Length: 66
Image (tube, one colour):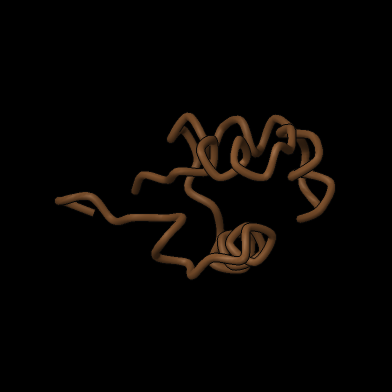
């Protein structure tokens, strides 16, 4: 699964730490998700999407083989 969290953060001008605080995880967790090293839970993915005011599918995309 890929995501465009980095792009969405840039649009809203928020840091990884800011996003992490808003969704209740560490900055390192956000970094791992952005780097595609960690797949977030459904609840966390929904929280992240809500921060950006976007549908889940606009922030997280399945890749072929997922």
